[in-house]
Length: 252
Length: 309
Figure (cartoon, rainbow over the protein chains, first blue to last red):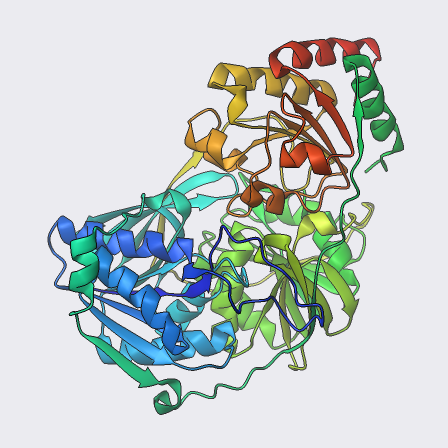
């Protein structure tokens, strides 16, 4: 089985983000960047499948500026075999990303495509599903468990009511949720070794996909600030405050 | 005919969030509802009662990403807007549909500013994006919690479609958490417990307070990871996003990823032993002390006040 994993470079999830005062976006210069956490779970899932055998190659792809090489190297250090950077400095929409990935899929012909369920910057949760549609494959989103059964996967998904298990025939697209696994931190020798693994850099323009955005972003603004409240001294005061809130609630 | 709304359902019942989604969708035009289910009749009958619904369309099929996407794709050309909840189903199908129709979707909408202007949170609610969508057809998902529900008292016609849809993916089994508490994503009151609750038994205290107030019960990621509470209770950036009128946080210090999930709460109350905890600092009302002493007293006090909901 050949696996393609798509990963994204985002503002590190431990950084408290700051909206630019001119409301054009979120400040990313001089901010720590790293691999989107959900993408790490996708890479880890691929590496674990390879450790169980039956995986011929793990190819990792990222789309973004040349610094996105860093997240590809992280994935190579975790155990992926080969990297592809589709290089662009433009902020691409999710549908454009999915179309570029579909071109990579057409070239690479993977049996399984793994992605994170969403990126923690734009929180879109689109690309896996879009890529599944564009490549005409079934999808198993929000995966918390993947079991290979011959030419089929049994995937347990995190859904609103709890979890559900579905069977998808390969080739398929699976998106990773948090409980799928615990991503490894690559040891130093693996990090050194990653630098000698093949990494192809290809300009986004060479794929023949229209990169122009469809939507126009008017502004990015900070949420309304919360004003600090008061501390009460006793349980009965706290209960009274709850009671007063409940009495003010609009009946549904 | 202008807006098509996909109805969520579970265990043969319409999702209680549907009335909120109808209210949101109604801002954009007359709403038709689509129900895809193996036995859609009862679900459709519930949906037909919601004010503002013009028509309910049913498709008989097991509800998978592919059957729902194919149903929507078949109907989409008749509509200017196709919408769903930003639930696990809506998130699964709307992007798939978007790629089939070659439309860039706008998802997790929390505010409608005009026929094609929408606000959506990014960076887990730490920033808000205002977008204009110039495409001829809009594909949207709404955060149900951001909208007030439409009233009941309608009797919209139900039309069964003879669409035949298939799916390569097959449903095998559901694993659900049994609970009679309200749905976290749409509850008016939510009680959340943190890792300081200490154990699954400790969470029974939180649940008892939840029952007293008719509230939904949730937990932080740390409490879920520690095994004190089930997965689907998790509130936060990577769990459920809540927007209740009142959120009561018990023993929760307020990690960034948890705070991101409660941005939409109108009022936040906190019980914590640490007066310097980030969550205590943003709380509207805070009580400092030992939760194991406070919570039982609080339940007794609320019962004495006769606060029945």
